[in-house]
Length: 72
Image 1 (cartoon, rainbow, N blue to C red):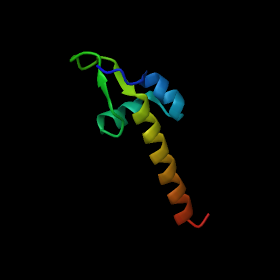
Image 2: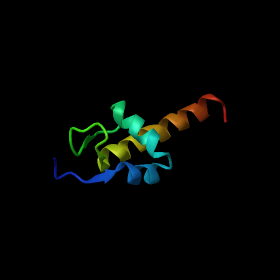
Image 3: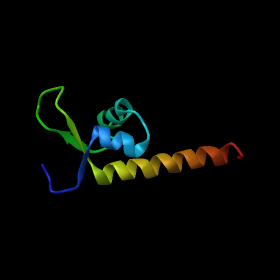
Image 4: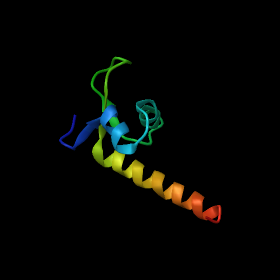
């Protein structure tokens, strides 16, 4: 564990405006850093707030680049 600020997958989903399932997919794909509270496969995931914010910035940058490439 760490002293870094953390949030639950549910909180991250609300912050990002996406489903918890999508947030967990990003966690499992190593796009958002965090950890499980135990070794059990269904154990709750805790995400680093800084990593969630970075994921959000990158996502918005990709969306902006996609809009620009479409000539909008």
